[in-house]
Image 1: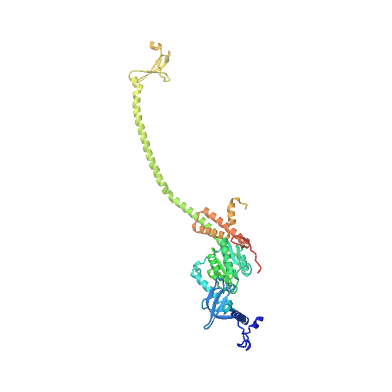
Image 2: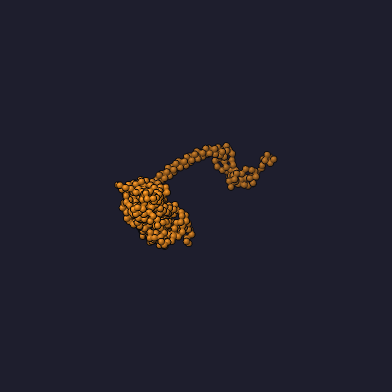
Length: 425
Length: 84
């Protein structure tokens, strides 16, 4: 601090005087600005300045430059990268803000400027509110907040994904609810930081990898309550996009009831607390028991119905068969009858044919009959046995035989027989 | 598992998730109530349904919560709560 003595701005009269032979001490701009800077910095400390923002610019370096003004004056402000990164959004032009910073001098230009550490919109959550509204308007413009987009949470998920901090009350509450209501459910935790810089990217990545794993049927994105800054990760675009793009439904369970986050707005279901989120994700054991009981009763009823229907159908068929029998039999009997008549006629025809053939045969037989020969005067000798006697050898002496003539027979006895000369030769 | 003939059926019944069972049960009950299947099919459906009810009840009775942690899209390990 020895320097400050040299920069006494109010030196005693006469020390710097012209024309007394002493060379007046002249300051260089650098010396002056340095002196002013140190003076400013040591006399103000940290102060709040309120005014309208104008010309807010975020440089590629991440530093932000802007001006605060009122009706009559303005002051240049700078917010360096690390502090600027905590801003939820850039303030709008003309927005009234409160800036906490240190007054200093930018020596190169000689400009008085405020090095801002924190910037707040009017009201406690002004800038946060502004960022929230900006993102909400953008997502709404894309139709991502539409109720039609909401997917139904599955009734009986086999596997539940949880995105939250591996420490703290949220994960404890969720696990204890699921263990009580649905202990058969598999739970997969994708652990992540849920607050602090970069937390929104981590939460988004955790949601994405659960979705990409293909293991889970529903995702709960959760954290306990806190200030708006604590919840901020769930108000940022990366989280909103990850929820929207998640292939399975997402339940947001962030903070306590009064806090609505962007995650709540894009999620398929909003739960006011992690516990309620877990309750929404899994069915209650009791509910499943009721479903099972109901199913068992309906199965039995269904089977009884099948038996009843089968019996009714059998009886119906029996009745139809009984009614159908006469109509089945009559035409066949008639057919049978027609068939017999036709057959009789055929037999008759056969008989007629036989008869006429018989007559022809009878005529032929008359022509061949030996009676005609007997008519002509021939006789036939017959042994008592009825055998025809043809040769002299058939007539031993004393044989009694009968001679058939045309009108009867004559009893004869052999007295002698001699073969003719031709027969002997 | 002494009844060998039903073995394949029994295995698939073992493997089904609760969600799968409840979904299949709903299907079976609806088929019985609406489609009016013939008696043989109704009996088979009834038996399958009763099997699902029994297995689901066993599952409810003996389930213990299993919690894993996803390390990346593929790797899992048992989850343990950490201190702050």
